[in-house]
Image 1: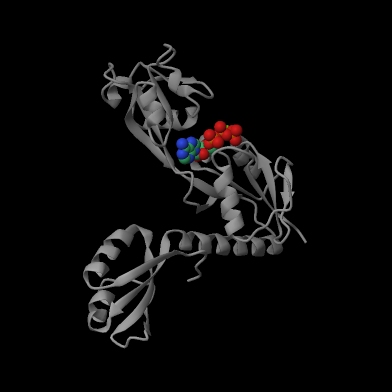
Image 2: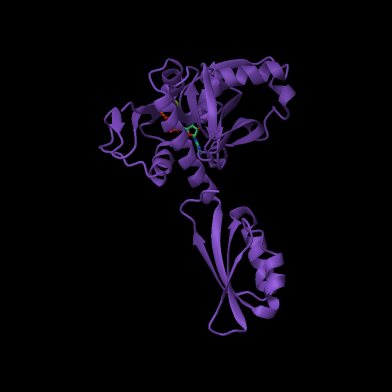
Length: 286
Ligand code: ATP
Ligand code: MG
C-alpha cells in the first residue's frame, strides 16, 4: 500500500507537539528517532525527519506529500505549497523590536535604519507595504544580540513570552505577523488511495483538536435548581441529566469549551451545583 509521506521537524520547537498530535491521532511510529524516514506501524504514513527550513521546499518539489511547519517558514520560503490546516500549536508572533528608550519610537523612525533578521522576505514585504526604506541585514540565530553589539538598529524576530527581548534590553515596536504550526501540501493532486489516507488523517486531527479545548464536566444539582443550572450550560446539544439515589438531587453531564470554562463554573456554582468534576476529553467526533 502506498504511504502518505509527511515532512516533520526532526528536533526543535515543533517536534514534541507534532509527535503528540500524531500519537493522539493513534498513529504509532515504528522506530527510533534520528532515522530519516520513520514508518507508522498501524497507519499508512511515513515521516520524513528534517530541519524546518527545508520542509516547504521538500513539499513543493514533491519529495514529501505533506509537511508540518510554522506558518512563518511557509511565508518566508514562499514555495508553491498550499496550507490545508492550521494546527493550533507552536503559536508565536514575529515582531520588530528596538532598544529600550532609544531613538526608534514609531515605525516611521525605521527609515534609513538597519534591521537584523532571519526572515528577510517577510520583513521586506512588510517594509514595502508600509513604505519604509530600511536596510535588511540577514543573520541566522541569536538575532536579539545584534543591536547590543552594534550591527543593527533593530531586529525582526520570533517573540513568544518576550523574556528574550527583556534580557537584551529590547522592546517590541510592532507585531508583523502571528504564526502557528500548519499542515501543508504540494500543488499536485494525490492519487485516490493517498487522498483517502489524507481524509482520514484530517478527520483524526479534527477529532483531536476539537477535544483539545473542551472539558467534560459532571456535577450534582438539586432538582429544584436544575432549570437554572441548565440555563448556564452551552453543551454540544443538551446536557445529560441522570437521577441520583437521593431523589431531590440529580447528576448533570455536559461538555464546555475551555475558553468559557471559568465563567460557566462560577455561574453554575452560584446557581446551586455541587461536587463539580472536570475531565479532559481525549477525542471528540461531532
Ligand atoms: P531547525 O533546526 O529545524 O531549523 P529552528 O532553530 O529553525 O529549527 P525552532 O526554534 O525549533 O527552529 O522553531 C521552529 C518553529 O517553532 C519556528 O519557526 C516557529 O514557527 C515556532 N517557534 C519558535 N519559537 C517559538 C516559541 N518561543 N514559542 C512558540 N513557537 C515557537
Ligand atoms: Mg530552522
